[in-house]
Length: 487
Ligand code: NAD
Image (cartoon, rainbow, N blue to C red; front, side, top):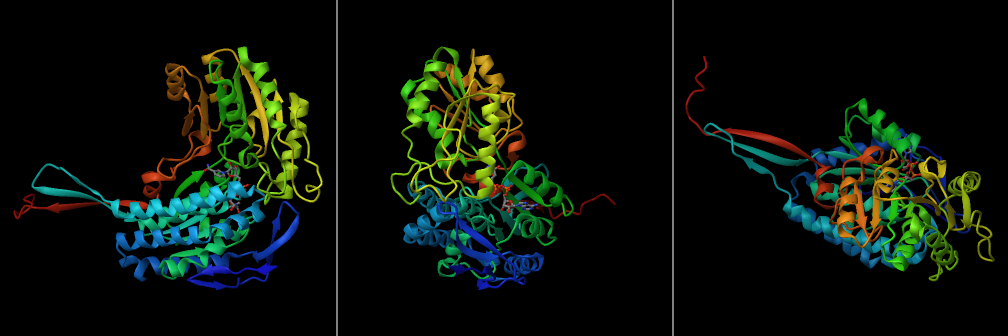
């Protein structure tokens, strides 16, 4: 079993504290590794390294082409090490290996995309009156503090590291305490990819200590946070003391809406994929399944029949489609919501822990479907972050829209219909940062990602993602050689 270190200033170094965190394989409920439980002094060292690299190091002088090449090399390193990283991600998160392989491929694509974007960042020339020129320059914001969750550990890290490097920032990234292993593994490729010491630093530890120290640190210029709404609010409060720029990618309770005219079989598959993918541990999970009344009963029955075919199993088995939940805490949380659902609505499938010869020791639950759910129920209002579907009937378009928007979240939504006019009316009126039509979950590095309402603010991915790491500097140039002529 490996004992890991922090990655600061281009070196793997011990923490100032002797405290360690256990990293668990949730499919076997056994210890996989230990990592430092970093304290404020470690965060200070990491931020100082990032600050030096930004203010005085060679990074400041690198060209956009250089940064692009570093990102291309990182993409290449991820591809070279894809099998190792996917297996490690699966062991640490419990997600099926076939899904981890997709994640790692997306990590490489993310570095590659931002490698290409590095040379396309430019400012504007603004026509102003008078004999003058006004420029808007785009400059890296400085040292970024980046905090990520456990559901897509390396992918969420790449969504943050790649645009920051692209913009010319330096960073201190804190992975989730449950899942620090893949980003630490990738750190061993940073120097070979050409990242100078201090540009990317990785500090493992718990949110309340290492995370909070990063958010409150006076030398950090920006915080990029992905996680729960509750912690997002704490981050916002803590960042206020130093008035940092922040971006928050938070949770959701996303509606997946099925009209009676949608292609039935495709729609049923879309409902299951939307909510059970990655064990339902997805911020954009379609956990509220809204179905138009004429197809409602038939739809629930078809979902149940198909859900029975989902293989719950050891995540390294290539046949597995639903692996283990990430931790004992998450298992207990999902089990509690399964019980709440049984009191609030009708159970159609699942409803408990999953059992089987290979599932005894890990944190496995059954794919669970509740129906006749009312949108006021807790299972329709609170983010469960597990494979638990709440199916809600609706009468017509207005009713679907009312129910869909009746949530304090606004991350994502999906609409299924063969009527393009209706689909577009729904798209226009749904209050969510991402709306899919006749699909749910495809995510592309080229396109923006982020929430409305309490699902957060700021955007990741695409050209929007890099904007979060840039400042705009206005430059006025007087072209006239005349005196100003006021006094
Ligand atoms: P979480 O909010 O508990 O933790 C997220 C991260 O914040 C972790 O690294 C944690 O250590 C850190 N943290 C905790 N307390 C902190 C504090 N006081 N100060 C600074 N950092 C702190 O979330 P989680 O349980 O790891 O992840 C699940 C949540 O993440 C869900 O709500 C999910 O919807 C959300 N999520 C959102 C997106 C998105 O793109 N919108 C993507 C993935 C996950």
